[in-house]
Amino acid sequence: MQGKNAVLKALRWGLGSLLAVLLLVAGVWAVSRLMPIPAAQQQALALLHHSAAEPAPGRNAFDGLWLLGLEEVSDAERAAILAEDIEQMQRLAERPIDVPLLPADVASVAQAPHGQVPQMQGLCGWRGGDCLARVRADPAAVEAALAGQQGLLARISALSGAGHYRNRFVADARLPMPNFILLQRSLPAHALAHVQGRSDAALAGICADVRTAKVLISHSDGLLPANVGAAMIGGNVQLLASVLAELPLDHPLPAACDGVFVAVEPQALSQCPAMRGEFAMVSRGVQVAPQRLQWLVWDKRKTDGLIALSMAGACSSRTAEAVQADVPPSWTSVPRSIWRLECAANAAGCMVASIAAPAYDRYGLALQDGGARLRLAEALLWLRANPQADASTALLQMPARLREGERPLLLGSDAASLQVASYYAKDNGAAFSVPLPGTASRR
Image 1: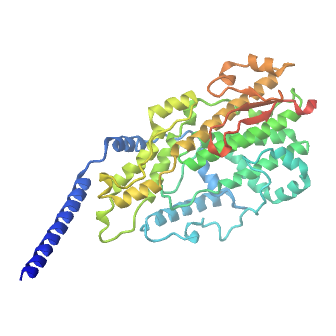
Image 2: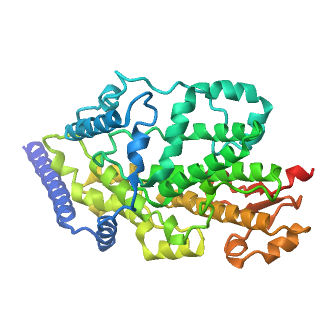
């Protein structure tokens, strides 16, 4: 009897302990569920939900970029294809999150009946070093590779007339983006034009590409196009300097270059407009598949607050001040641990937010580098217009707004190059260095 009573007593104690644990868990979950979104996350959401400014005047670069690889199609046909693609992507965005989108689903309707630009081996790119030297090493091969690219090159040039970039599709991370890589094909074409003695055509093409890049870096609603613009500026400024190093100092720039190489105002390098578009896309795309007990571990509103916390620093006054001073900004990212009270009722949301939270503050460094390289390009043109026997003397006479600042322009050790420091990680901290005007022609 005593043994039986002991067993019953132990059973009652175990059941009581289990009930206590369950009540504790339920209490923690309830407290977590009822917790308001922290003030920092509310502020972050407010910054990212702020009404976007009206786009800059001019055409939307997205239209040309989305169908950039499409060959032998009239402007009227392109407009009809784009309209049909927009409708198709709208329908796809309405699919439940647990229904996968296949590559065939998100392809342009134009891909089947119309031709695409021929493939081409990458000859040189925006981050590939001295494109001019690569092209000069085998110009015949480059000319042959570019033979089937003339339509594409004309479409790339036409993009310079755009005024802004706005994604025409629903903001959804599952939907495709334009093939920005195609834009790099114009770089070897410009280099080849110079090698073949068509330097004015080369300079006009470089300037057209930089016009497009300035639109992407300053008037985009997404991080990818803004960062493409920054890389595009770097590659074309490098090529510009290489061409000018080989031309006489009195060789005039074509009219297409008027006003292109002018250092932009710091606010034009703000990551904020692009980040707002990025947040809209990530927020819509971050979901969990519908499940019967999904509500126990998922709170979309609080998940958005966590994601916003990792992005909103791009729109803070502190970051604006850092960009104005041309110093690297930084801001708080989402905590990685899910063992926090706010995660008890949003465990899936906390995990998703931590996965979807790269170091967004690093992306803006590429934009700042793009601005610094435009300043360097303007400085090159000033040196070209104000030649001095001694480069050091010329640099000291240059307007302070060009040569000074957090990242001053410096002469290379060979006194034949000009450089500016880089912030972006992909450049590995190496200074961006270009030859001085006329130096190659004097060797």
